[in-house]
Length: 124
Image 1 (cartoon, rainbow, N blue to C red):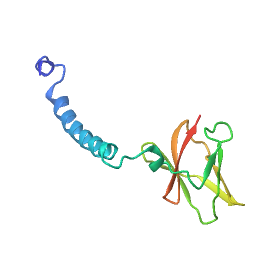
Image 2 (cartoon, helix red, strand yellow):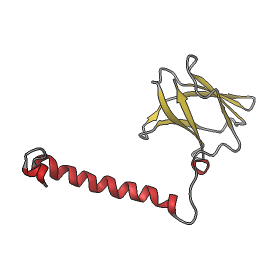
Image 3 (cartoon, rainbow, N blue to C red):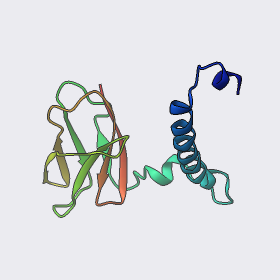
Image 4 (cartoon, rainbow, N blue to C red):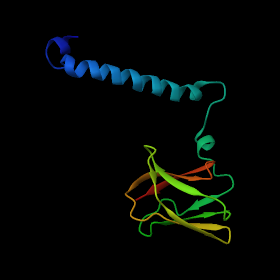
């Protein structure tokens, strides 16, 4: 309270900050609950790579990755850690899908196959 009275956090900043903090806190709590419940989630529950293999990972110069054990009807999309989807071009032949990442920025991404399998993809 002394920081508010001292003018360091005026009401114009303090009140919106508290409202945003309440929303963030509730979302963070909801996100964390499964990690402490009887059935805890692991990264393998979210990033299930049981049937397909992504390589190379991390990827750098070529900006092309491959996914083994795929079919022609599989579909893929790429998101960043904020959930924004990115356009990617891919082609499947002989149980391997080649994915061209284009001019994607350096960062951590999630490659999703058929809305089921997820792969962490690091672009450096």
